[in-house]
Image (cartoon, rainbow, N blue to C red; front, side, top):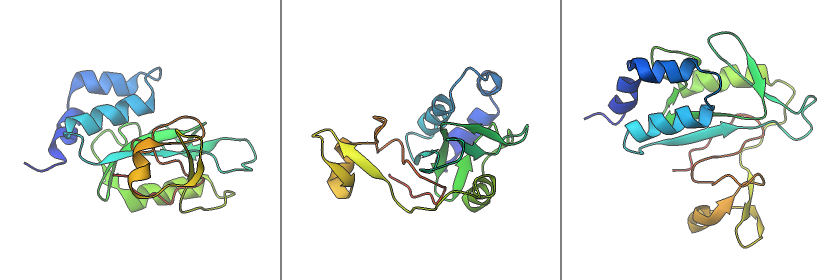
Length: 157
């Protein structure tokens, strides 16, 4: 079975589409559901505002037009982004999504990695086995989320 079939099947599920339509449901929950439907293959990708962002928010595409907020999470599997609030029909190429997000955040300074605070209080770049205990400054698990100042995504899984 193709590793992406579980998430694709979820796109056709009316209950899942109702969840996607409900703006009270967090994007992280939708990304989690998609990843779980694929047997936890792939990972979640989270974008956050760049340091010094004029309004302290980050932009991302939706089917209703651009949205802005403190963060946005999507499910990523290889070169595909699964964001049903952008495209309810299925995944889109990761490169296309990155281009859209970068266009919505033109004033951000691009970074290729993030600094995480480990549970032992240390901070700095995280490599190798340290990913297991790494946390973003907001306490997000680095295995599930990769905090970026701008979208130059790197998979964490």
